[in-house]
Length: 156
Image (cartoon, rainbow, N blue to C red; front, top):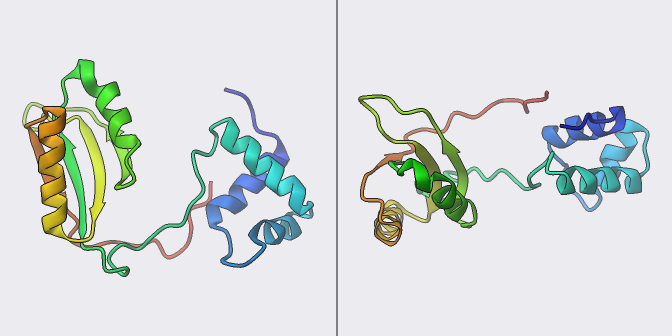
């Protein structure tokens, strides 16, 4: 893995804090770092291209936006299909996270997806359809009970 330059690290730290909701958010970052707006944009593009950053986006507080169909779905996926199924889910707009995790004798689920729909009924219908489409009958739907929100951004 290639090392990041100091400028790249500085820009990355600012991006992690979050961009301002304004017409020129990269200009604000540039001013904080004593760089040009163009430099910040080019560094950001490079970080995206090199997959240091996967994407830039907003964090939607689903519950405040009236989206009540939020659930972590734990799937049992045969090991030889984990990559295929994980990539399938990662491409879906209604899935915000896809993870693999270690299994245990009492918990066999190895692939986790965070799925969002307008309400619980739509989510359950979608999960059932996905289960049938992917031939993955073993899963657990874990609905969000309460969102715990960080008071300040995490900076590395």
